[in-house]
Amino acid sequence: MSISHGERDWLLDNQVRKPRRSVAGFQHTVKLSLAFDGAGFAGYELQPGKRTVRNELAAALKTLYGRPIKFSSSSRTDAGVHAVGLVVSYRPPFEIPAGKLPLALNALLPEDLRVVGARVIGARSARLTTKTLRPYDPKTLFNARFDAKSKTYEYLIFNGRIMPPAIRDFAWQVKPQLDLAAMKKAARCLVGKHDFSSFCASGGDDRDHVRIIHKFVIRHSSFVIWSGKKTDVIRIRVAGNGFLYKMVRNIVGTLVEVGLGRVKPEEVKAILAARDRRRAGKTAPAHGLCLVKVTY
Image 1 (tube, rainbow, N blue to C red):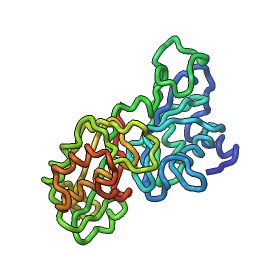
Image 2 (cartoon, helix red, strand yellow):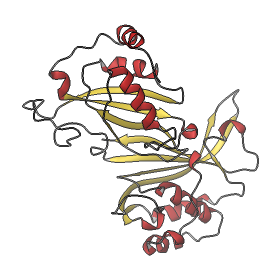
Image 3 (cartoon, helix red, strand yellow):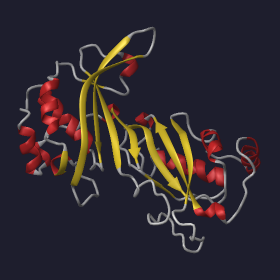
Image 4 (cartoon, one colour):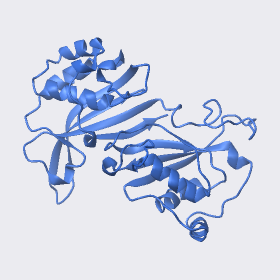
């Protein structure tokens, strides 16, 4: 979004408060929590000629602060994947109260991308000065990427023949009846520390494919959208210290194969041990996946 200098000054005067430049302003990090509908984005990361979450946020931050802002993110979601808890961090050139940042940035962002929370986090040592601070130094300042301890994703499946139109953009329709007991048994094989090469899509830049899955929950769930009409879905929730490229979607696709009876639950352990992507199931569609939480 492009606005004039006059419009920017009005935004600072009316939506936040006039910025105060100070040395102290350089000794803290801003932590933003983002939510977005992934349908209109080609993913999070910058891509030439494509609309991405990072592009939109970078433009809004540049407009607000009057200069480009470098920022780090907790995750790089794929095209079509949603989020309600993606975190970014940056060192601001001047102070804007955290309580005003969502209002100010949302005035500049598109409607399918929102800042839902903001915090100002101080340096970890009172002895630090502007000369000793380095951008994204995990030893001194909070960093959305390097300080993340775990991430939680949820995947929604509508298991039925007639898909409710209201959820078609955030749930994958699987028409045949799924065997949840078999899927749960298979998922237990994946909990813990493993090499997840069998569930890593080509094109990723991770050299180390070892990750830890802390928790795997598969259950029936329901929610109400309008007029008391209850919609039933299968909710798959997985938490871990990190995830490889399309790892969650590849795991979900494999578990659906188990639920359909095409793969036995005990075979998943062998698929994991094979470290071969060809052994696992297909990649589940992106629109059913959402990053729900990042823990620090």
